[in-house]
Image 1 (cartoon, rainbow, N blue to C red):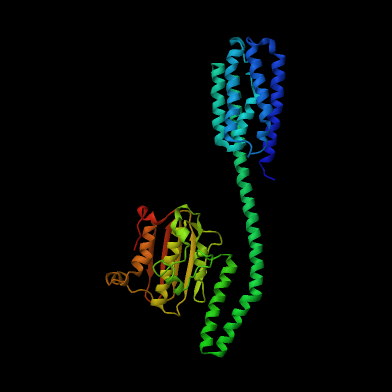
Image 2: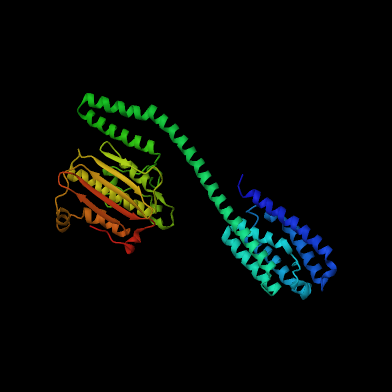
Length: 416
């Protein structure tokens, strides 16, 4: 049950009970009004309004902003009509307004519906109406105005906290359900696919020849599958729903300059309108026997286009590792989710890059680093940094600001 439902029911009860109080109060002091006809007309209209709309405050779906404005108008109108219905002496003496404490129900409706900001706005309107009706900053009027304002703002804040807690609880239930399902799938996959791949790897190594190569490939796929199962990440899919191809051949066919990931055509065409993409799901398929993938264990969202470009840059960095460090080199991918940016580090244990080699390669027309990595990060407003010591491997740090897109280069500049 929603945490808001009891509040809406309580508001309905408050409106009904305060209406009864207002009618009794009017009946007792009817003879004191200077123009009782005006008071009778308002009380009749207020009773009819309540009879027609009392169900509107039973739930958030029924209680629309238009209704709240109309309800507040009835309250403010009644406060101002008191100037016509009652005598000046009685008003200055502290006589109640026509709607009296029923007015607080209209303000509380704003608090429950929209939080403390809506409550503050509605209570300010009521405060102005009360001051106009009283025509002076009398102590009791100011006291009542402040009391209504503080109470409604406090209730609005409590409602916002309750909603946030409810969303957090729902998310926790979703994560728990997803974790249980992942564990079930992991058991099934371990008992079937992973064991078959492990057996193929062992048998291929024992037989030798072409079977050994087949066994090596089966071993890499086993490691990649174990990474996906343990992290619960799902690789990106193409337009037909097939998993994205992340190998060297798949990268060449992805349409991202030979490196990157397969992003659905619809996502590429309307990336600005799509929801965020978990970067981990695009990078996890890179894991293999020689590539270790590490991630923070929580979603790392980026806009679709930015996530695809970042994954493409990582693919280009891994291509460089295979090309310059050799097929036997080991690489590590580390994803970090910072408050303002996403950082992906690609490190290898190769021979490293001699000083000045990147600049020489760019002058010679080999633009893999300049375009596939730096160019992509520049367009996102991010940066690409190389740290390399000859004989100790190379580390590439790719930084993408959150909320960036292909136009992000206008906000930043890639560093060497």
